[in-house]
Image (cartoon, rainbow, N blue to C red; front, top):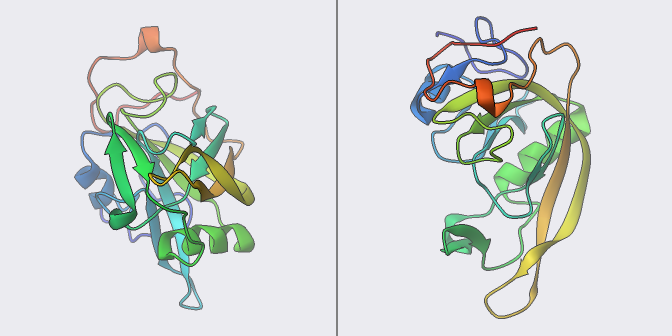
Length: 192
């Protein structure tokens, strides 16, 4: 699409735009990575700040309520594993880890975050077989929380956690599952 990644909305990409794969989300400059959940870029002073997150079946401590989201931060790949297909952590998350630090700095500076939902997220709000840009959210709270699951050695795991609220005037409402198409077509949108 030719946008240069930046904080906020991108020209020509309205909330509700759908993309078949993460590569297309990346090519539209909505997210800086094709795998990671947290995207970051350099702010005006050169500090790394987050510009987008992806909700796609992340950690069990995540919550999606459409107008607000509770999002678990990131960990190095060596600190993660899957148990029965569910992502788990081996040890506590760190606020100094680049993704978490960037998302926290966006909170400190009041930067909005683009939220992209994938099909593996909460079935009430996720697209069926694609990724969808769902507009801008404000980070309203940052905390260290204790995960629902313990580490493999039985110790509690501390997680970096972020609450985000959808900003008003996003010109899109949630569609009930019964009216969604079984396939996604890039740039098909639903507006008020």
